[in-house]
Image (tube, rainbow, N blue to C red; front, top):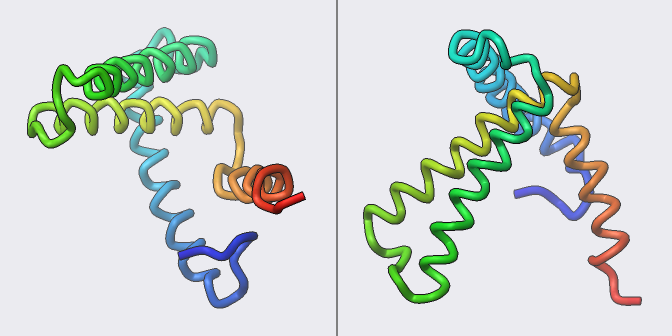
Length: 122
């Protein structure tokens, strides 16, 4: 996979491929959002609130697993949890678009920050 910091030149192909895949997925998610939510698809608060709502649904499923009401090995639970995670991701792609951000670049900036903060023994 990737090294501790931004990958070296040997991994650039992987990054470029990931950028293309994310870009394609984002374009599709944005087009869907415009069709599905014509009045609110450009509303940052709406998209972040929807993302949070879907994350809440995923948390609720995880809570049921944690307290022993069900298990992740239940095929219905796996299906439901995976659907909620994809919903979060879809809204995230829309938010990234609204913020006009380069998600991969921002990921590496944040990862570098977190590595400095958490990754090294002081």
